Length: 120
Image (cartoon, rainbow, N blue to C red; front, side, top):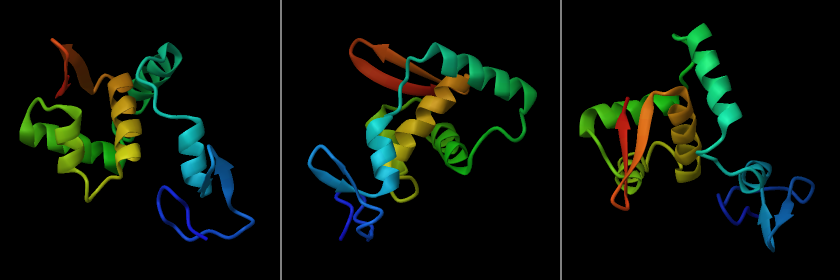
C-alpha cells in the first residue's frame, strides 16, 4: 500500500490513518503538527540556540532557502516554493521557513495582503 500524501510504499504495520487517509509515519507527524509561524516559546528557543551555535544551526534545506532569497531578493512564498520545488518538498519548506523566521534569519511581512519573505 502507498501513503496518500508522499506516495511512498508502506507496510500494513507502518500505516497510519488520519482524516480518512492512509499515511506513512512522516506524513502522519506532519499532519498532526503543522508548522506554526506564531510560537513565542519556539522563537525564544531558536534564537537562544543560534546564539550558542551560530555555525552549526542551519540545516541543508535552510541554507537552500537562504540561498534562494539571496539570489531572488524579496519573494512571495509561492515563488520561493516554486524555485525550490525539485529540492525541498513544500511541507518541509514551510517548516524550515518557520524555523528560519524564528531564528531571525528571515522576515515574513504582510504588505497590503501580500505575504513577502526576505532576508533579515
